[in-house]
Length: 384
Image (cartoon, rainbow, N blue to C red):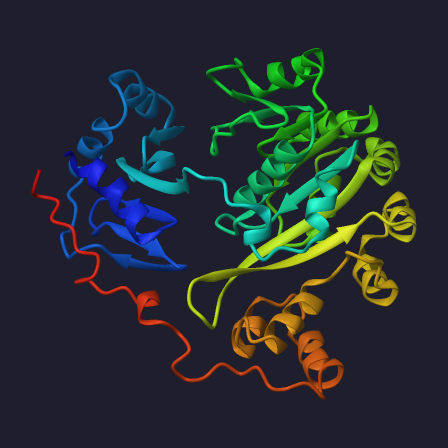
């Protein structure tokens, strides 16, 4: 078994999220949010290209050298899928590989708000999953789509770069197109999507004006469209969308966004008191009041409006985090570290929940398995 195949197996066994391969450093593996070296062997500049050659062909290796970047999905039977990002840094090859389990987790198993199951069953509108890299938004989005897949007869079309989770047809037909393989480019895939008569369209990520425009057009033409966006919360997401467009196009954009947007769901992963990671989720539903604020471009008052109106299904990060602390899911300090407003969260903990029992985790709440040692996950790269 090659070194890379053993690394793939190790990631699956340890439920690792990422592995980092770079010259002049040992290989790092990330488990429950913590990065730790698999052993003390420092890689030479010649090692990463050799490891890459074990998993991609000569054409892909040359693409990396020509373009400085290589992104693709890898599948391993019985283990799962992996997302490879290889790149050139300081003249040498480096890689980051993300592990994606073979089975899509049931939506109800992810400790997510129940409203997410309702959102994905909608007939039309735009739903955005936002969060930083590694926040679990891709997993949540896949679980939402599979929830619909199992319960509604429809055509689900995905445009992904690369494909991460493989869906099996259930009540719905799921057609997955990988950009660069099944579609020449995202632009071509977007232009032809409606010709494939989908009920639900999932775009892997919105990065530019063209993709954002297409997503809104799908939502406004009677389709349900889901996608991801790199932003920390709904406020940042809305401002990032605005930034895609020049000033003269923004009035029309705000009108379309207020009409087509269904929800912005923001997610962060926190260390749970029982070990592992658990999601904290902000849900901004496009209620009539929120719709009016979006149309005006008044994003700064949206969070305050969410807190005051308390629309069913909506919640801010602080509302979610306060509940998680009270229920003992996460510790107070962990919650404060991930709050948009630690002051707001402290107020909630001291007032909203002052009569409820304390949820401070015991000193030994963190499981030993969350502190991986060299001995636990050692791997002899010299053995084959």
